[in-house]
Image 1 (tube, rainbow, N blue to C red):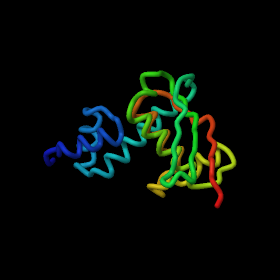
Image 2: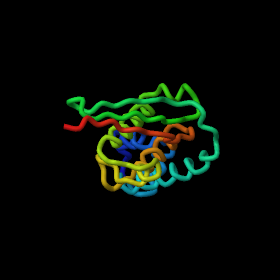
Image 3: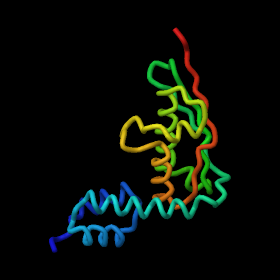
Length: 153
């Protein structure tokens, strides 16, 4: 077996939030194949997120995003379990990505938004972003509401 790449471990930690030991094991099991290890860790993350789905997400943020030029903006209500997680960069970045996505379409409801392709990566849905954040941050999260504002020319 070849030596584990420290940069791969760091990158997988950042992408998945998995523990270093889990990352090392995944890389070892897949003979240092980064993509296969990432896939395994993401699947484990989805299982973790499913277990947390019943937990009460009664904290969170109201997050706003104004697109360049100020002609379109959005406001979302994103919930999580604790104020601690709501203050993290990861949670706030998730909110920004979702609020930005709201500006790109004319969504009728939360379910439609969650099932749409993510604008930055068509292989993911918005619900996948939330699932990944749940696995990484260890708390249940839910997009509760959103609104889009547009100035018509």
